Length: 315
Image (cartoon, rainbow, N blue to C red; front, side, top):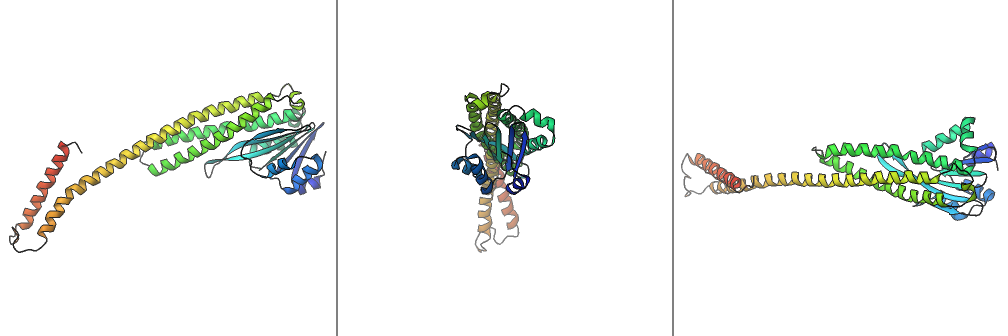
């Protein structure tokens, strides 16, 4: 089924047709687009609702005339330096492929634009059926995970250098951001890989008619990303433990120095307080050398206490 240009603009639906296959791309879908799909393709209401909401895990639902799939892909926000989840919903039928997404996956938008503008690209991706097109879309988005993975690795190296510096507050913040990114990435990839494995194992005619469609390879890429994230997780935990140890050591040094100063000052404060009472019958109270004698007493006590701390190996 094709739709007019006016209706496409009104519903924010873009489409490309090549031979018998039509690719519909819906960016930031709304109720209007869902109603259009329901009337023309008779998709189930819960699946249309899933396209408008954030589903926690990728999934695949099989029906007689179509497949409904939800994929999650990571998107790295440079300004906040965090990884967020971008959802792509897919309806795959015998002669159509419908993709619905939030619009923040630049690779998907670029692929659609290339297919729209370049006939050779359109023939390469769309000439072999909807399963072949879906394979290339998912393959492109899975491969886009590797630059994000490399970015995490670079950030881990930077944090590793910071751990042994005195920038404690900055290090703690960067470690926390990295741990959050790795946890988010792992959650995305684990569920995604399970869906790709299920997609590779399904015996469905539309997916099996093309010999070049190997969803198992995409699942293998998912396992590779998972292994890298597992290594990064261990590295972050090690760096966090090291940072905590160094921070505790620095804190103990500061507390030790402050304790020594307080212990030395305590008897000096006592002596100064006694001789500051202005009592007439205290020793040396009438002598002009009283101040000098008191200072010498304080110096002797300080030296004695420092020597005692040294003998006890407290400093």
